[in-house]
Length: 488
Image (cartoon, rainbow, N blue to C red):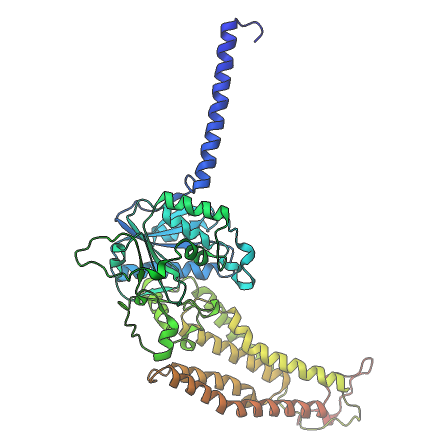
């Protein structure tokens, strides 16, 4: 460069300076886009086909990611059944598996918007099981869906009973109060706006007050006066309203209202959407949700019609085959069911050994009824799930009966009690939820003495068997077999 003329050197220096400034400009632009939530989102699926959209959210990192994936697909497909005239959009974090994204775009027709997770500055306020709400602030990305005039943001635990497209006539923000003081963010209407989104990001940075550390507490802080706003009534001429409104309770009917009366009658607006804002283990997609919770069957009926259960069937078939093998091997290789003669040796098992054998028998009986529960895929149909559970509990109970030589009827008393309880809960003609609850408690009260008596008889039988013939000979002592210890 030293041999170049002064003009050439100056030209090269200017070009290098311009290139450096261009790189810096691109870096700043990317940083600003990231801060604003733009430039990071990429869309998969069909282009916008309607003026409005129903949107849901999915992120990873909870113990129930797959269950929520299935729930989102069932809910979005239910919108097709009620003939919703709107696009279906999923706001998905970047770590959602690609095959899930492909299924939702190609099979379900969703538009999937891939986003980076928003940092939750209130994470310290989330304690215990509420840690699963850490990434719910990703809902704020709904305000970036500017291809649409209105967006109805919905959680995956909703069941649509009828068309709710009139919600697109609501104003800039509308939500339902299922709590006397705070609105519920399981369903709300918004008008997308990048400016509003930027303002919310700024509120996150400055630490706006958040009562629960998740999306609901943050949005309640953004719209603190919604309780004083008028109730939404859709204009008959189809025009859109401006401002903020409260939505009638019929757009977010808490499932607990149904369990009290066993039928829907919410006078505030149309009875359109059921929500399940309960403990995670009582969501409607779990197989044990019915008949424990009567509405569980409604969700599974929608899945049966729209999605099916092909993904869980291989596991179910493997479990059934395993239980058949257990029953077969147990019956073929079982020890003698009785020992007619008392052992003539004066030695008896020590108290410690007898206590350990009894404890092992109790643990085995508990495991026989608990293991099948945990190995069944959680999202199978309730009838399928309970059938496999009862078959598995029966197979393992037979194994316990033959290993510890226990009375079959006493071991199976618990199995029969569970079957009876399922029939009591599934009885479809209760007048209301109070009568149903009294029937369940009455059945449990009447069954308790039989269960206790069966446990006592099993322990007595085990004690008698231990006194007749030790399970284990003493260490170093050869086993003596006499004609009196044989079965004849």
